[in-house]
Length: 55
Figure 1 (tube, rainbow, N blue to C red):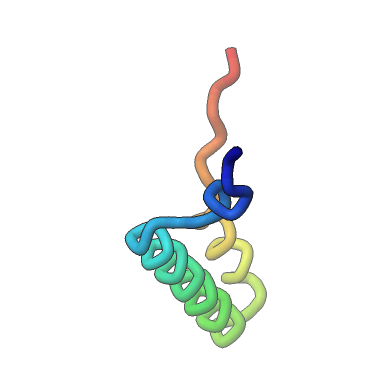
Figure 2 (figure 1 turned 180 degrees about the vertical axis):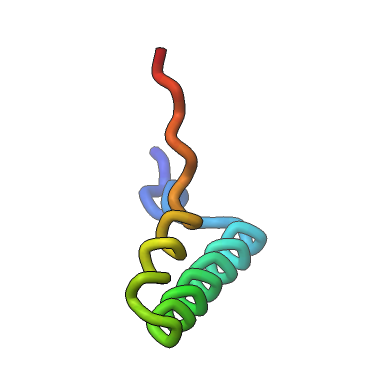
């Protein structure tokens, strides 16, 4: 019926975006390690999505 691989396949654009995001995250992590642990929390906070108001 449906190809199970089709669900997991990504377009070339999505693959490039995912690779760029992973590279950016790795770069931020290495920079935060170089700057010190107090900056790591700030770097992680920048990556996290803003909390949404669930009311």
